Every structure is written in C-alpha cells, then in structure tokens.
Image (cartoon, helix red, strand yellow):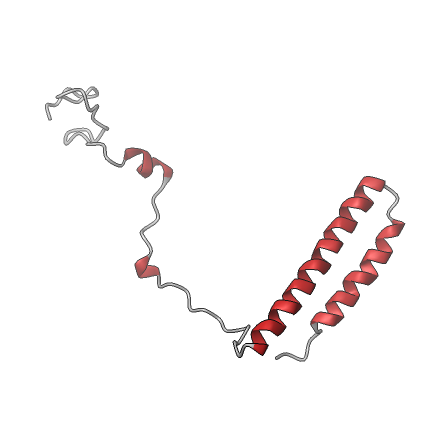
Length: 111
C-alpha cells in the first residue's frame, strides 16, 4: 500500500468539510453540499466495511481485473452506420436503396 492518506484520514477530512459547510450562506447550496459530503462519508464507510470483509475471507480487495482485450470487442459503429445497417446501397451512386423499389430513387439504376 502507499504511504499516502488512509481511509480514516479521508473520513476525518470529510467530517471537517461537513462542519465547514455550516458557514455556507445560501441554504440551498449549503444543503446540497452537505448531502454530497454525507453521501461521500457513507460510501467511505461502506467501502471500509466491504474491504475488511474481503480481507477476512482471504480475498484480495485490490486485485485488479485484466480488461477484456480490444480484439473481442466489436468495432465502433457510428450513428450513420447504425442507421444504414440492413439496407442495400446502389452500385452506381452509393445511395441507400428503398426496400420497396427495384431501382435506385436517386440515379435510376436497376438493382
């Protein structure tokens, strides 16, 4: 582990900020900020408890999972390509062919 701040240091920091938030004049801004800080404190408590549970079970809580290789992911498709999937295109002008026509509405070439 690093020599940086611990989880308890972070929680003490959040509690100090929570106390300082009482000085915010605007009541809506104060309540919003206090809710954010209280939520962060709750998440830190949940994280700490879950971390301890995993350690007690012999599971490394910081085990990093290897990302899925990019080769297994389908290639990125743009919105335009998505709209055109399943539609035929004219061999002459390249425009999308209407399904109910046997010719290209743009250039007149037959399918």
